Length: 189
Image 1: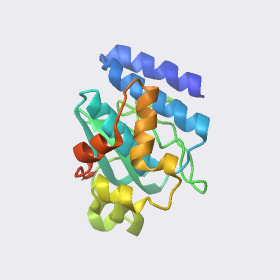
Image 2 (image 1 turned 30 degrees about the vertical axis):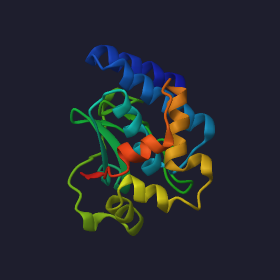
Image 3 (image 1 turned 90 degrees about the vertical axis):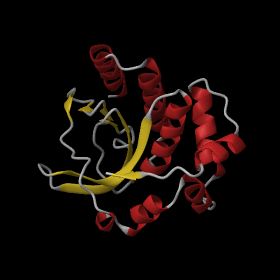
């Protein structure tokens, strides 16, 4: 499936004139998630992806909300990236172990079908979020990183971002990341 999704990313990027920095960053993170079986990390990966895109001068927005698919009667709290009002949801195919995987979303398109995703990424009120998502929403990235102190060091936000940055060709300093992005908050969608 990964090769098929990679092909579709290239096809969508060519059709829609998507910047190479966006498609390369997305593809590298998607491959890393798959290769490392990194499940249930939408808040962490979306924050890291946001930072990496900003470092590539992409005007990205870090989002959080309750996404839903009325056709499948599914609602879940989630984090993702938006660029020019288009959804980039790389983590949806790697949910928590108890969750159901769905195809990644690139440029608001389901990468299985190359059609607009059936998920709705709008209309959330803070009270719609469960306790964990509400906590993440209320934290800036510095607070969120502090909240992760019991996690393995390699998957903590700043280390993860630095390591993913190396994969996409960016050399990052953790102190610079904290200073530059620590006050960033997610946007409720």
